[in-house]
Image 1 (cartoon, one colour):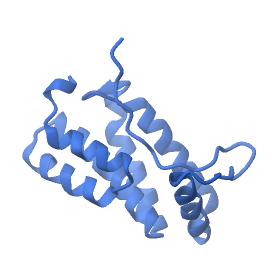
Image 2: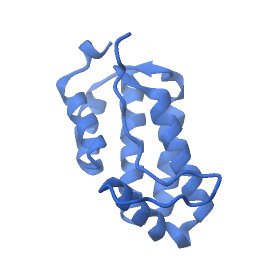
Image 3: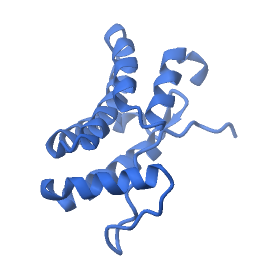
Image 4: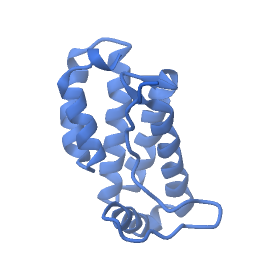
Length: 146
């Protein structure tokens, strides 16, 4: 299905993966507003995860937690792949981030953001606990042809 996705979608994927979450939101919103389901719901799910990451980068714990959950709920029916991306992978990474966010709570959102930023620039990230991996921003992985 990737060949049917508009170029703006791939631009949004690139923006998302580069941590340009607000730009990704703007790009996807323009697509989302003009679309009908099921593509509309798909775009909205990715858009909400992008906005959740944007909120987290601005220390908005509540906004990040709510939108991660809403975005994940919208994307559940698109597994394992849809539109040329590995939806299950995006959901797993988003769920891990949401668990870390919830475990740390609003009072520790700054430490989570610092770990996410350190991991993004290639510094050594430290796992939050023995049972949870080092925090990282979700990435959209493209489907590889078999």
